[in-house]
Image (cartoon, rainbow, N blue to C red; front, side, top):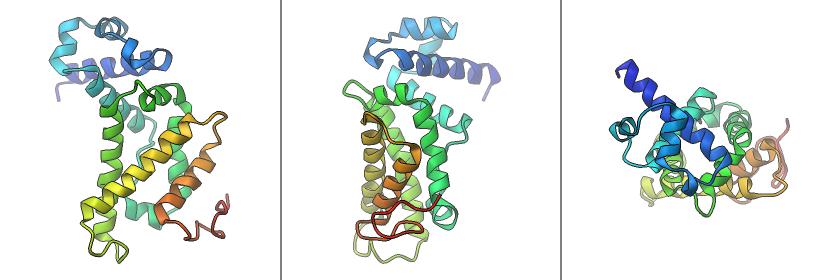
Length: 196
């Protein structure tokens, strides 16, 4: 990609991400975004058709910049899953004002769907490479969609809590949703947080 194009896109992404930190998405105009980004309005439309797609790209970039991308599911199962989830969730905690709006009543279905698509892709890959029989007789895409929907729903519900428990608690909740009801969490009894 041409470096100028990449710079313009990143400027637009950062601008919208920062504006959503302090304003509802529906209240942010394209004029606000281009002013914050220091580009002209036509530059916006050369790169994006709407704010939702820009916001979804902004979230992807912010996660990558923070090193907070989820690892493939098989890697997650073979490493310290809670630590990986904590790293992922720490990004959401640090940007809770943004994500509270993204997941909120007037948020972005496109951005939330993009997050869910990423988790679903990782889940699909994990199921295909695992030896589990839990999903026998179920299409892989259906199982992966169920996993992704659960993870993203827990993430959104956690962000909405006041007071919001720490990222370690949210990581434990997501892990427990991933492994299923009644299963033993990492390093503990059912219903107990894993050791830190």
